[in-house]
Image (cartoon, rainbow, N blue to C red; front, top):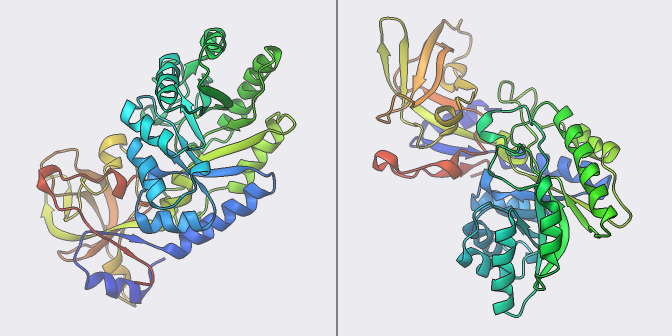
Length: 389
């Protein structure tokens, strides 16, 4: 992915920074459009994965909608000129202020996660003499077989309306005249690589659809969320997620009723592989049992390893730049400068013998990298650069 020209540019650029390959992003988006449009599926981009303006502008140019989980994400989507009719607003804890902003901009749909939330949206919509489109986010109790912190579809999780609450919700809707039920929403988790979990979701959605049909409740839209995983271990070999199999699976197993539209909310799978965190080695510290490569980037720039014990491929780009040399490999704990023991990107990472000043790439950082960055330890926010800059 990185040629000599790019590595030379990295050498002359202050680190750390996020590097975004916009060509990889465009290729990913084109593949998503091609595979989803085979079945007339509608794709929304989950802004929580990456809300960088340049990234959003490219995504919008492919006529992909916006999936938001906060009022500020709705505001960002509006400011970046996503069409309001393509904006959906999910989230288990929407504030009155956030709901009012979304109502003022006549977004496509609120994905409601509780009966009380429905009552609040109805009240706020009534005050504005508006009718709010809603989808019920239903907890399907499907195991996504992913990390426990990014599983969202089990009854033990905080998200969604439980199936045993549907009777009460259906009755309540009769008393909430400023709500219009237009859909059902599901989301079972993130970084899902076992696609059988999505088949299980389809079968559960079919069951729930039958419940609504038996109660003569018409459902226009089915939103199956996102969660499709990417390959963090071999980002060059598997640059694109398996969108073909993913969309085909939903076409094969989801019972789509006449006139129904099917929506997806993909985040990580669209942007993860286009982004890399570029850092520089500050020090190489010899230890009793291990060596430490101490970088100028830390958990403030890429939180996932500290938060989820997540893996990111780590490469020494400076060693790749040296031609015709036999690389002597050593193992390093690759760590950052933050005053926390959790500030570690990887333990016993095999790298070419590494020196102060070497350029290090932490791959597949386009999702949940920049967007989760913080100023902890009063760190400066790092900039982003883009292919072609």
